[in-house]
Length: 184
Image (cartoon, rainbow, N blue to C red; front, side, top):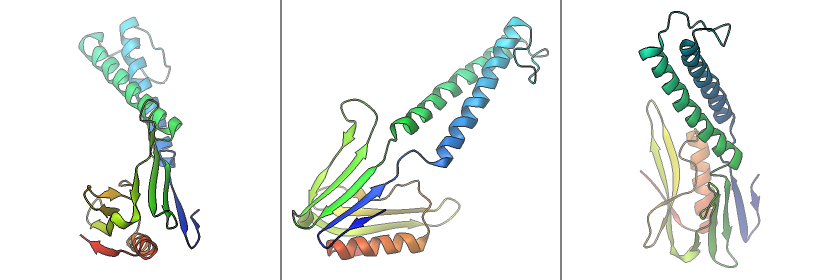
């Protein structure tokens, strides 16, 4: 839901709370829990999970390896659940013509840098860049080139946006900011 007027444009950015992240966090949690429980079952010599038989798995070395993979998977899934819980990467892009300022706000992990809030002057924006790479894993990202700084992404790098949408977004941004567009 973009909020746009003649002088102000606020564009919300989605964060980590996406269906795919929920799906992979659940799959990773259940799979790693299964690995861990089968490894522990091989240590005790009895099945802790009725569906997963561990009778033929020796604790040394197979059970230890399964426990290790299970623990590693649980750590990775807890990281994914934390990114979902804190909605890391969400925020907004705010373009204010009256004040002549561009504000990019993103949420990070809790701590000192929880709020990422860079601000730029509109007069320092040189152009909007589109990076388009086709192939097996296409990459379509919009960047804002600012004088004296590195390019700043305006869109998420992992989003699968079709070519028409990214071009339309680039045209809208360039028109509002009154800058040119460059594709690479």
